[in-house]
Image 1 (spheres, rainbow, N blue to C red):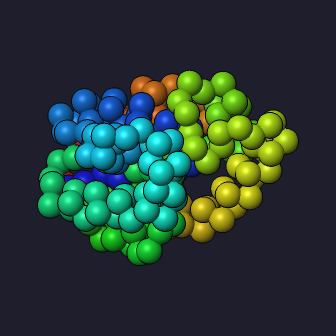
Image 2 (image 1 turned 120 degrees about the horizontal axis):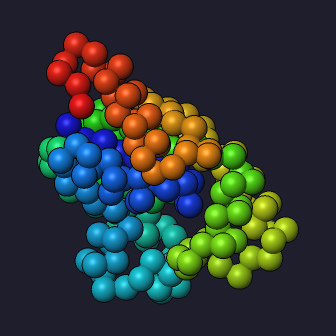
Length: 178
């Protein structure tokens, strides 16, 4: 069993993923962290040196390598589901959970976030708003293919985790549950 957390940057995939994995007693990985460790570069450095296409190809390699792991929660990069057939692959290999947030909350989190995100670096507030709204609209075509969607607006990490576990219980009501 694998759980893939998908959603826009700043949606809480890593934070919620850590918590969910602890609750389930499973392993947790963040694909961005794996890429950074493997390359010895930060994500912004990767984008600067190699570009987004190279990064997306590296993400796909990581995804393929994780398909052999069981009992794992995987926080994906925000664009991972939109590259090649990654979303279909994740849906076949496990449970995809879309952490949905409205654009205004994403924008607020990105404006005040402490993580250097290469796709929004150096954007003024109006450019950031336009980027988030346009990119989210394109990506939601993929995100909406998730098996579970959680509206994580106004949810604490604990309550978002509980919502995911409840949705998993419903999805697997024939099994022992989570």
